[in-house]
Structure formats: structure tokens, C-alpha cells
Image (cartoon, rainbow, N blue to C red; front, side, top):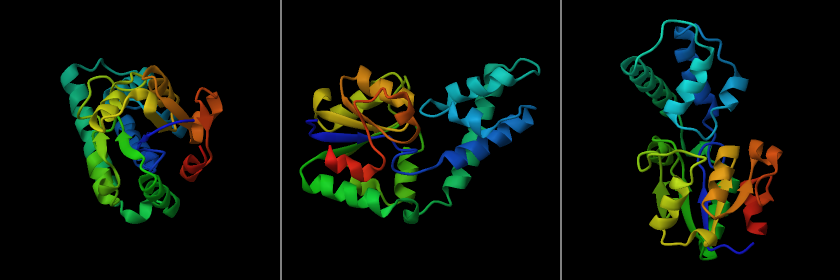
Length: 211
């Protein structure tokens, strides 16, 4: 596999904030009388906040919600989530991740983040990862979330790389599909390995060094 840049998804790859998403969504779902499980939460991997709410509302049996109510729910979910994120620190990033990022840079590989999350900058700051990347493309810069390739194409643009020179690391099927749609190399980690859609499958971020 020949690549000159690596674009990382954030949640589930560099850091693990699924538990915070789950707790925040569970609180919102509970207010709506919805039984929200960890299995339900798995369906939200890699999709936007608004799309996540629509998936949760599939089990909603109350009065129809207008756009204003949905907007309020989205804002409150994010506020709850950010309270949990406030507990994050540099210790939430493994030594393997930091070491791999350092070695990739030493080998002249450009590094970027491509995440649909609008909290990406906040998370990178809390975990002391901001300076590890040449560029960050996140949910504040796009209008279409994964599996649309927009966020990865934006990341490639920011580091001045052609898509074919980029390798995407993803833990969600939607993210792998976005990488493929962008014309980029792809490596699946975590749950994304189960679908075998990616060009490569890795057990840990450190395995990138073997690609």
C-alpha cells in the first residue's frame, strides 16, 4: 500500500468517547420514553448528531416532534456530552497512538483528522493531540456526513494531498465507505473489521507502520 498521508477518524480510533455519547443519548432517549441500549448506540457510529437523533426516534411513540423540539434535543444532548468530555485528559490517548503518530511524522507522512464530530477540536485539546496533526477536518466544515466522502476530501485538501495518496483509518462501516467513495486507501479497525469492506484490517493503530 503506497500512501503519503494518513487521515484518522477520531472516536473509536484515536480516542474512545462512545461511552459518553451513549450516556448522553440515553438520558435524552429516557426523557422521550425510549429504551436506548448499547446495541442501539452502535448504529450511531460515524453518523452526524442530527441523523443519530432520527435513528433514536425510530422507537419513539409519543406526539410528533417539530424541528424546534428536535433542535432543542440536539443542543441538550451535546451539552450533556461536552460535560462528560470535560473529564478527558491526555491519559485517554494510549502510548501506542502517540508513538505511531510520532513515527509516521518522522517518516514524512502527513497526518490529518477527518471526523463528523463538531467537538473534534475540543477533544483534541483535552487530550493534548492538537499539535500532532497537520490539519483537522470536522463536522463544523461539512454539510454531508459519512458515508459521504466530504470530510475526507476536505482533510486531503487541507494537507494538499490527492485522494489516492491518502490512507484512512476508520472503525465504522460508514467511514470505510466514505474513504472508498473518496478514492482513498482504507484500513479498518475495531467494529469496521467485521464487514471486510476496507482494503486492510488492523488490530491496533500501531499496525499502520506495517502497511
